[in-house]
Image (cartoon, rainbow, N blue to C red; front, side, top):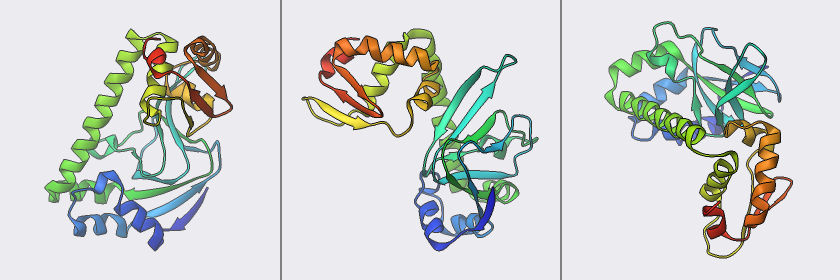
Length: 227
């Protein structure tokens, strides 16, 4: 890991991220004044479950996975974060500021770090920042509820079908798009083992889904909705 200074381009990227929309500009500037950037290689562990977290993290570039691991080595992904996404936000409201999961770079990544003490101070001082953080936490809860419901209610191929439909380009005819990450990452994101994802894609082939590496072709959205 390398530690870098926050440059003007990084600062512009952070100002535009969803977390800071609606936050007073002077508060955003105070948050970013003490920020720094860390550079990571693919596979680097950013933090481990049970460790103290001292910063609010925002992806500037790359891809980050947050996950938990079981006693037998099995892993469950809780989130996959790309440019502009925030993670580590739960520690703002937690007195212990302890990580509830592991964080790992899935590809070469740049991560901005905002001092947690400063974030907590401004949370108490500025209601616009408090509202932004609460909005982020609500979105996280909504995503987790959806993931839990999908895990309980949908089969593997239905989970994949729903993901594809959400990310398909608009249009009634055949469409194609490129997955934003490797299929192994998609498997973890959907709570599936890699072999279960492969079986799901095989099942969906009869519904007009063709997989060519990371490129997905959907020939019949109606058939996919009925999967």
